[in-house]
Image (cartoon, rainbow, N blue to C red; front, side, top):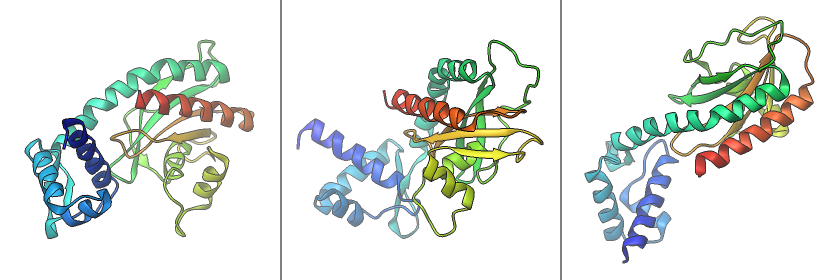
Length: 223
């Protein structure tokens, strides 16, 4: 097995493990990769040595602390790359723009904002770093809409999944209208880019703007 082949299998193993919250056994990894158990065991053992995976209950392999370290280093890079995109979005719409990320499986945290260069009379006070439930607010609902549909999904999540962006009114701040689109990010549970206004806005136009911004940020996160 070549070095590149070993690297490819190691990365595919990490990807498989990251997608299963319960973890995978060595046998399950071997089956999904189409390799023998001995090879799967060696891959897992190597990843363990770098703290990228760990063994839990029932010999299930889960992501280790090393993977968390990589994720924590990636988020600041995403934030820096998102700055210009958010500013362009805010200027195009004339309202505040925000980048949010999922945290802990059920929380949404705004991590970056941008105000339009030409200030409007009504501004929205959005607190960066203050988490809220993913089920509340356009930014969190947009992230939930990235996930496969389930019978328990709310009507708001289903609408966001169909439209490609979410819309809420007055959920996080009285009178505020939020529009957001989610995008997948390596090493994170999900992210969204959105806008919020304190006045009547063209929802369809904002929806298209956040969808375009989300697509740009998704490409940047993979670059």
